[in-house]
Amino acid sequence: MNVNHYTYRVTWSAEDNEHVGLCTEFPSLSWLAPTPEKALLGIRRVVAEAVTDMKASGEPVPEALAQKKFSGRFMVRIPSSVHRALATEAAEQGVSINRLVSAKLTA
Image 1 (cartoon, rainbow, N blue to C red):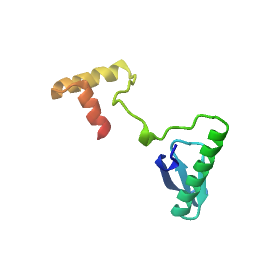
Image 2 (image 1 turned 135 degrees about the vertical axis):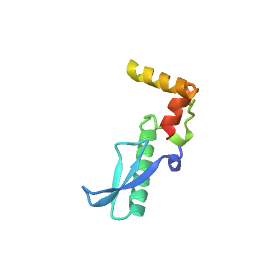
Image 3 (image 1 turned 90 degrees about the horizontal axis):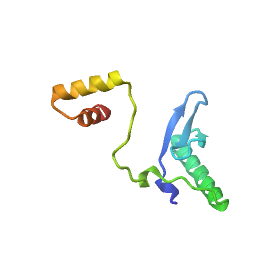
Image 4 (image 1 turned 30 degrees about the vertical axis):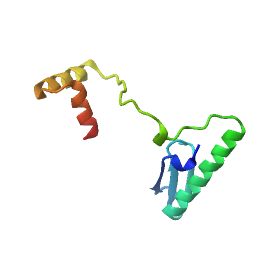
């Protein structure tokens, strides 16, 4: 597993008055630092250590989101009234409900 393929981000923490480095694939890990650059370096180092420890103990290591294959399909349950409203709107626009919902999700 290449730790450089994980999804990292840095944001400001008003509560801590510092930048916080985060990794999507490891939501329980974070790193506080005075600069965004140091926060990114810190979280990358913590993730690398976590992956090393997980491998050493035989734990499964999370797959990087960037390496996952996505089918483009997912199921979502909604109230029947919302389903009816979407179906009506799709019919009025002359498109499938899938096309309508996809357009709404990407808007």
